Length: 441
Ligand code: CS2
Image (cartoon, rainbow, N blue to C red; front, side, top):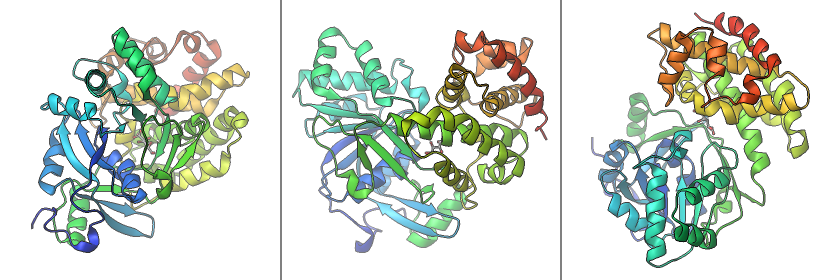
């Protein structure tokens, strides 16, 4: 069977002509970007905003997209609806490791007005050759060249992602570059949401039957999607609101709600679910005991911490748990379980800290942390659970070194002294760990 490409596409599948200019550079063109920001850009419509997608760690995405002229399709799977759409806004693909000069040139190009990022929690740890390093090199080239203003839009699951990114860029830029960045580059925050599990061969076969061509870059996603973007652009942007994005003055309440309700419950279900032998989030969220734990987290622990934000929480939480139960989307518990050391903070520890400041002991959020501890422990004794985490070495030696609660609470990369020294938190975790362990099948 032929590969999906400009030749195999029919006119009806094509949205834009061949001459869409690249005005967006996206760092981290994985499945999430392809099912989220790229779809919004496609549906925003004008055909003026082509994307240059940059791969960070793996060359595979470049190998998938290049022979297809950047084309790929999105298979949307709801409990009782399915659709397949071709996306044709990706107009160039750069392998960030193999072609650093091409990336720098794109970032310096005055035609480029927006840089978006999905580099995951891990990407915000600066290191030589990492995404942020390359972004800074590109900004330096831009300053030295046209000096044209630019917006750098983080689309990662972090609180205040725009500010976090700006502070990192400024802290690692020489003085004159930092001054230029302050005057010419904006860093809007944004909240992104769509569940996008890893694509499987079976998904690719299903799409091929519908497309009449093989799409190596296929992505699979749920019908729901949301994008809330801070209105702070230095050089224009696509009319993403035409595709349903919400442009607001302050993203923080939306980010907090999404991270604490959706991602917090996701992580809780992932750790307890994986321990209980559930392969997918849909199975875990359909297990009555686990579903109740997730609901208690949302209702009793998270909602009170969000009261002052003025956004609706419980109805939102119900929709989230329904989305998790979507049986057509086999999202693996071990996929959500990865990188826990970086995910715990924004997803569960913020809830715990706010609750403690109001004198409450948030038992379900603490159960989430205990579940992560039991999961980390189980990965060291059982070969069938993976510990996919940038701090895997520190975590494994911690759980092997003695008392699991004490030794994991001592890991600075995850917990601060405030939680470590809170005796009520420590003893609650000590009580909850055996409960979390009892889920193990
Ligand atoms: C998930 C998220 O993998 C994970 O940790 O919690 O990727 C989640 O699916 C998205 O944030 C949904 O928007």
